[in-house]
Image (cartoon, rainbow over all chains, first blue to last red):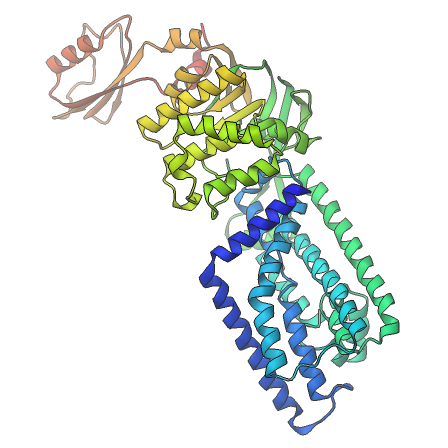
Length: 262
Length: 330
């Protein structure tokens, strides 16, 4: 366990070392936030309610969802890249579990990201854009738990795409597909409740809305407190399911692994 | 320490049809070629041995090493390293081994070397006193002190390789695999690295397996050679008999000032040498230093041809492997 914590710490160090990159990212997220803010203002000019949401509620949703949306990507890219270059050979010679190592690196970079991206977004959101506080203290706490689960689900899903590089070598296409699916179904762009009924049904049986929509809906109160237990359970089941799936694909991959390069 | 029995590894390689149409067909139907990278190789290596594992490019060296490291699963046969089947217990095996791959780094690219070593300490769970002691000893031979504060990406090849070696021996491994540890380095760094490897082996009984194309590496480090070619074991034995056979072989390359009119050898050389012409202005002459001397060869050539330039070289690993392959070791 100690070694993974050290790896986690080294990732924090690493992220801090890239100072320029650090701030460029922060600026980019603020700009994205302002664009979304103006967009929804324009949409609400001629209406006061969309799917039972008024403007302040929608803004709260969009800002918090954007914040979480930054976390759904992860280390999959790094994994597929190291598979493609053959670098993975060296990783496999180390006495650690590569998947666990990646998850800890992922956590490290997400902690950095929360300082880099989320903090400025939150400050601006609360101070200038009129983002509402969570419905209640309990709601806020449950949101934190649900958000954590959502982030971990995102990591697992990303790892699946990464491991597939053992077969496809180039996962660029898969990543584009993944991004498309995630921006629609995770709820990072718009609440899934804005979907037509048939699409909403599809979304409900997929794991993606657990990543962003579920926690944010707890935050805004769209999911009432008494129903939260059930949604958390669903999230946990998805997390475990995806984790097992990653392990399964991983062990098959290792058995028939072809390492590229000398 | 290492036991390899009837080890084989086959790769399946997708056959790509040429052209755009071929690419489209590949999407729906793929045919595979099987390539045997390693076939039926057996050997066993005792603790503290230093073995040169050599062969031409693509002979199956790295495939074997990868199976010893537990990264690849053999198609057939058995491997055991320190009593462990590497691919079944990859992490336990990983704790017993160290490795340097000349082309890749196992240090962390962006953080200072000191932090890299520190991270390795935790990853390998090296006790603090061992860690400190090792780092101190290694620094003496490899002169690491000035490198500690720098990340790998800011190091020269030689500096990087010194750190890599330290990293490979840091956890007191039982076996160390060195893949081209001196490639592209200057003479003084090479010497330092060879000295380090010899000391490690002498003081700690570390088993070393070295793959290289540098004959000098082998001569200075190894006492035993294992050669493979096209995935098959070609030779396994001590270095001495190989050296007796090839150690006296020299090649002199002549550049002629004017094209040769006749490509025969001067009469006094003909029985002893083997000449290979490259056009009419270059000739490579091979001979055995015990049968005739370099000065005789050069003198005879100078008499017969207008020589512009000449160089003398020792046999390369490739030519030795080729020779053993074609004529056997007698």
